[in-house]
Length: 238
Ligand SMILES: Nc1nc2c(ncn2[C@@H]2O[C@H](COP(=O)(O)OP(=O)(O)OP(=O)(O)O)[C@@H](O)[C@H]2O)c(=O)[nH]1
Ligand SMILES: *[C@@H]1O[C@H](CO)[C@@H](O)[C@H](O)[C@H]1NC(C)=O
Ligand SMILES: *[C@@H]1O[C@H](CO)[C@@H](O)[C@H](O)[C@H]1NC(C)=O
Ligand SMILES: [Mg+2]
Image (cartoon, rainbow, N blue to C red; front, side):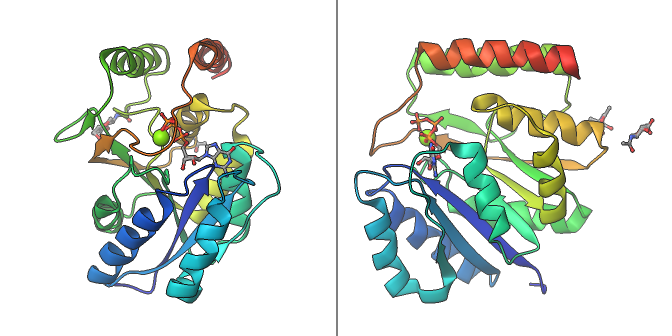
């Protein structure tokens, strides 16, 4: 395609069953589209042995996979920062490793970025053919509600604020992360809000989001309260 290189960050915590599949799919779609890439696995000391699985995958895919593990669960935000520090690409792709984000969309992100020279391309569940599969009513309601409330308060002109499947120019991502203060689900949202403030250009690609099949979901009441608090904080400070 071009001389660009894409670093795909895969933060993992207990993704032993998902990692081989997601890596296989990434390799398949990137190879088919003839895109230069690397996969950076940032495992935070998963007790289920995700890192051992990653090491086996490295034996198969060799230098397409970099392992940048950390000793303990230090959170998603710092996992991204850690990954970027080791990224050789000029573009960064961030996605979940639990198969909620399908690698088939990556070439679409890249194509949109290139046609408009965008700073950021974000997957959206709430526009065009986008959608969510496998969530129960409660979780859909929470996600929709969170997005609606955030749209109302922040008016970011991006349809999916809390999604985490995105492509960034590396220097843009670095700058954004250095300006973001929040953690958890609000982090993704703050990134887009700050991007708007800095006049970065953002494009959207509709994605289908599929709930995790393997492994346990961690969304609970405390996350929701945390989200609401942080949203209000962001509203008050931007
Ligand atoms: N390195 C690292 N990865 C993490 C951490 N927490 C979550 N992850 C990974 O980040 C991605 C997103 O986390 P998820 O647990 O899927 O979050 P979610 O999609 O909001 O919630 P569920 O899928 O419903 O559990 C997955 O690939 C996780 O394995 C962490 O503390 N450190
Ligand atoms: C909002 O997005 C639309 C479509 O992407 C764009 O045409 C418009 O200029 C944007 N408005 C602002 C205020 O950024
Ligand atoms: C972003 O664009 C607006 C309107 O054109 C301008 O007023 C503002 O100074 C710009 N902000 C930055 C950080 O460049
Ligand atoms: Mg998930």
